[in-house]
Image 1 (cartoon, rainbow, N blue to C red):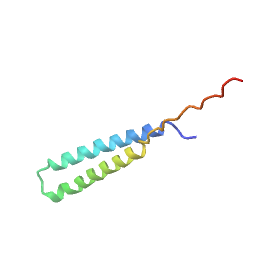
Image 2 (image 1 turned 120 degrees about the vertical axis):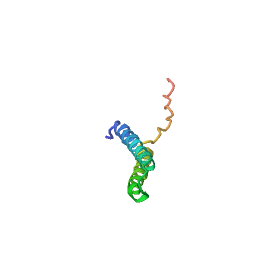
Image 3 (image 1 turned 90 degrees about the vertical axis):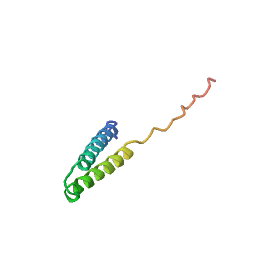
Image 4 (image 1 turned 180 degrees about the horizontal axis):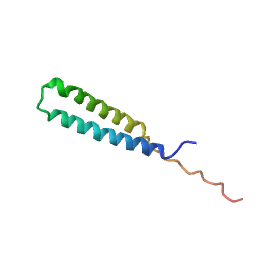
Length: 75
């Protein structure tokens, strides 16, 4: 049986990665050092955001609307 909380855990990890990656990108772009010192951090932020988006898409399956089965009329 599939754990129903697994979807929320994926979303929580995705949000954490998006925030971490976004913060890393912003911090690396505000750095005044030469580009070769902040470029690895920029790549790390971009990869974290991409992984976060991938996890969010994997955990974001929508539920399909189910049509209730009608019972037979009484005889």
